[in-house]
Length: 287
Image 1 (cartoon, helix red, strand yellow):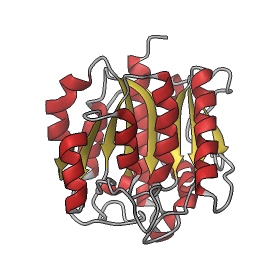
Image 2 (cartoon, rainbow, N blue to C red; image 1 turned 60 degrees about the vertical axis):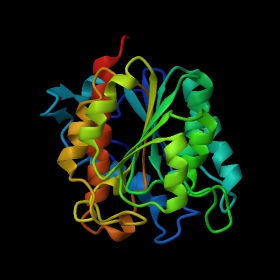
Image 3 (tube, one colour; image 1 turned 180 degrees about the horizontal axis):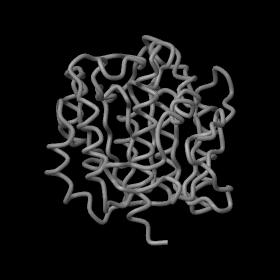
Image 4 (cartoon, one colour; image 1 turned 90 degrees about the horizontal axis):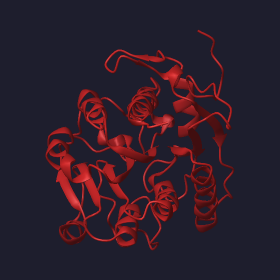
């Protein structure tokens, strides 16, 4: 197998040929515990080379998916709002060219501009959010724009009942009070609650945001803010496979922090999640 550095496994198509496009967004500014997510996109690409293009579970080959990897977006240093605008413009360009945006983080705040861009194209958008943390604070450490506030900003933008949160095992009382009126929050588990709510998602444009810390730190230690008691990789992949048939219009995988993962477990799991998502999306595509 030929290995190319800094390119995701199987990303052989040109931009013109591609139906899906990977972009790295290594924002690492508002992380409150362990910095290092700026290296997440590169680590995910590197560890993707450990995988086969063929998915045994899906009996499908990544080489059948026309997608490209454009590398990382160049972000202005230390200027959070400017960086968010750059990400939003980049994702908007992909959507204008009728591509599926797949964002590699980077801290979770990168989801906000990506979802904002997708929402403009799909006004009926709903968001599936997998995470250890609710990320529903109104502000954190004095700022309303943080990886701890990102899903509150998303919920406020979309409106009540359009953000579905799975696997949550860390939140404060204020966040839970907000969730009761604004989001559909499910604690600890992912696959079982998803099976129950899946009928609500059918026929709607769906954005998937996957914070890799939804997995237990035993499986994915390389995250910014580890939280014990998470799910196993098998549950994550059962969930992804159960997305088959839904209308995925945007994907991100965030909070991979290779600085705290010498074995590369978190980026490897993130890479496999991306492979499986691309294959699920390809199976449902009408082109």
